[in-house]
Image 1 (cartoon, rainbow, N blue to C red):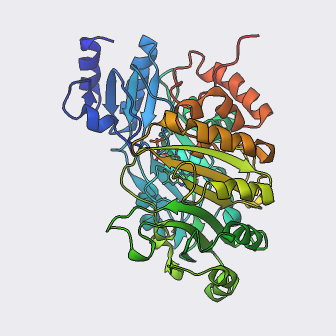
Image 2 (cartoon, rainbow, N blue to C red; image 1 turned 90 degrees about the vertical axis):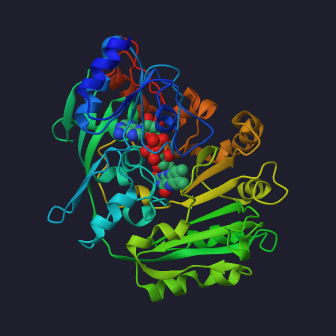
Length: 459
Ligand SMILES: Cc1cc2nc3c(=O)[nH]c(=O)nc-3n(C[C@H](O)[C@H](O)[C@H](O)COP(=O)(O)OP(=O)(O)OC[C@H]3O[C@@H](n4cnc5c(N)ncnc54)[C@H](O)[C@@H]3O)c2cc1C
């Protein structure tokens, strides 16, 4: 790709085209994870679907790899050369109250969808952080705030508009192209760049939710208490427990500032009075430093987990857990206090029953039987991702006998995005089918800067 190619591309797209050294290049390639950045030969800041098509077509002609970035929360593999398509300018959301669906453009975040849907008494199946990109979250499974009650967000996709590796813009439904639809929803960025998708919304206006904070040292048995409590909860109760090393920073609320805390979050879709009764054992389990539980409009659901919105450097790793017994609790406890080998965020999400919640599986999101999802996030302040490797390798090797695989949306980058880890995120038969479909739709592996599914070798 030479200067003339770049100029010609720039004349055909509505968004900016940036090369190294251009003003705005660094800002455009930066995302929510400060530990990693793409280093592409050129960036197309797509302003419309046609820009994405032009960019992919050019890359395909030159045999260049293509990466795509929305917010950068789910960074997988860094580009060194090639083309980066950024989607942050494409944030349009259109709700159809009759069909109870939303059309969501590639750059939209859940915070763009939630208020528009709420105006019609509807809600998307968003995750814990409203500032995460909708498209990637949904294509990676979408383990939402209400996953036990309403299942995986991936099951609510109706239509995809995407650009495939041959530079073609396609509209794909389970009826029109069952194979491609099945592969994209689950295979994510391996089969194309989705420029817009249509997904179901659910009728929901309010939720009973919030969180409890406890000091880890004052509540050493809380992990076990939480798991026993969660296991007894009905499907309307969705919950997580995390342990977090809180910084000693005046911006952090005084009761939890500078402490290593447990944070239990709940989102209950039933009657608030019943929700209040169900969470009572959590309130009594240990001294509560602060709590935020209330009946709230769904538009405030982002306050339940209250995750930071500012970019931070981090590495992460994940396991789907078949069970959480005394040994798993012991292993997690080692990583959840002031004496932990690394100060990291350890989170357990309760999924039990999510796999058979409403919604039809017409996609490659598998591994749905695990009752718990573990995510361990290491902030990289003064250390590199490489420094976290021994901790991750030891913890996840110890947990391997309890794990049925990994959740695509929570994999990390670098070694945590390698072939072994990608294999762990799929059921073996699904992965085999995905590699066969990859050979059909992207035989040159144009989309390889990701959790890569390589094309099957020709038979
Ligand atoms: C604070 C936080 C909370 C989270 N909570 C949840 C949760 O509750 N449930 C859950 O399931 N996950 C959750 N996640 C994980 C999140 O869903 C994934 O990391 C997701 O991939 C982020 O998407 P993004 O667009 O924001 O990030 P990006 O890094 O921009 O995208 C992630 C990947 O998706 C691909 N991609 C982006 N746009 C497109 C597109 N248009 N077409 C095809 N591929 C594309 C890119 O190749 C990229 O590698 C959370 C992550 C964070 C950081």
